[in-house]
Length: 216
Image (cartoon, rainbow, N blue to C red; front, side, top):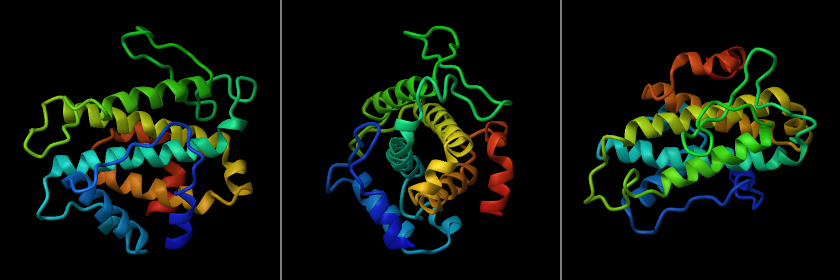
């Protein structure tokens, strides 16, 4: 499973350009350590725990970027099936609909087709994680007070992509052989955000039944 996971998530088909860490930095080392643990096949509940000799905010920052990269790739595998016609709303079944609001171009929550919503979301996340005033690169620069609220908002919004993909494009995941890989990524995400209380439990409700089957 570990090798197939690595192979699947190294494909070039991404929705947005992935974020990379500069070699030799603390974040790069944490990124390598997290990936090595993930691909080793050990219990994902153990993988998410912070190494005792590392800063918690660094650990969270690295994982925010990792989840952005992986969810970006997951959506990239189904985006050609996610059109204005097939997915006129960013939804997760009839009970859940997500509207976009960034306070700049969209000052009020606005209903959008799923692909447009996800495009804006990925662009917004990319801007946050590349903003060194929020995600400092050097270990000599402390994390700002805005870091944790921003990280939580990013992870909450990225979860909505999981919701849409699982509920509206699950058949596609199965047909391309991606189901097991996406499940592994989702479990890693779920264990991480619940380990550090980074996403409100109410936000996780749309996938509650599936989560109970996969993660309990």
